[in-house]
Length: 366
Image (cartoon, rainbow, N blue to C red; front, side):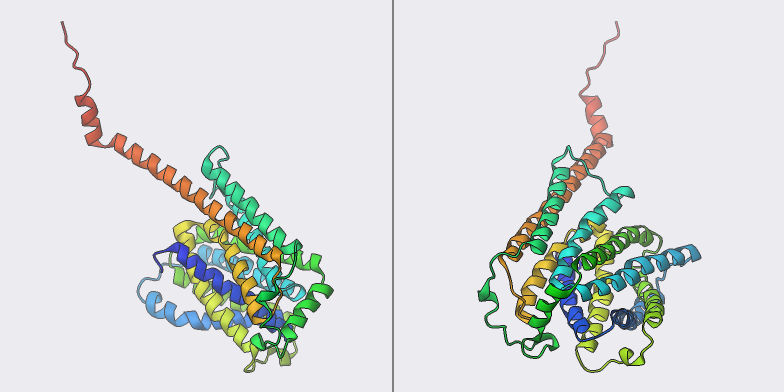
């Protein structure tokens, strides 16, 4: 799997879909979102430290300068701590499906940041550039359809799940909580906070490209970011919530959500994302976000009885078209660039020079 970045990003987005669902369930059961982020990062740090120590710290740990450490500290603060804290507040105001839908603004944000930092280029006169632009528009259009167009409900998907007990919801409480969230929360504020969280996340994706060049150990980099984010999120959570009762964990959905998000999301996917960014770049990773939305829609219907609408299906299909349009555009540009490099290499090769000279006419001096 680790040799195929396309398969890796599918795994990443499936894990993120689970994060949307299980973290929303924990918040609906009264867990403080700032405390949730701290425990999540603590679990991730505890999970990663043994692997980082035994596999890389002893043998191949690169030197860590003070400047690089400060960059990693800022990267953790912006891309992990603030992004997750803001996302948690926004998720309280919205739903798992909307959280997944608005996260699809990340490709556009990441692409614009990458353009500003000259990591990516957009050549509108080439087929690859046009395909990337069409893909971005399709992703945004699909997200808009999912967010604003419902259409008729597809009852066949949910008729067997009305009396579910999934994700810790007794009877049909999960479905009622979702419906209540749709009618009583401040959607404008929630969407704005989701967008802000995605800006922080997109900045993390782009800036990580530069930090990886200075500190190439992906496992140590991920572990250090988790450790720093754990310290940062504890300071924020302790400043916001002083009630010790809120800090207690029991054998319930809270512990399950913290363990899943800490180990699977922060621990596993952050490492996988660093690998994908190194192989394919930040925009490639961000463009796969629509996959998590599709998985979230299906899982929401199965696990918590959320109604699937025709708009969800149409929006999901539009976003898949956008996803593969962007991937095709990037692949097309890579093939053209590779062909140009191969052509230049062939022109400069000694064999080509000798062959050219052999076919040149010999001048006769009178």
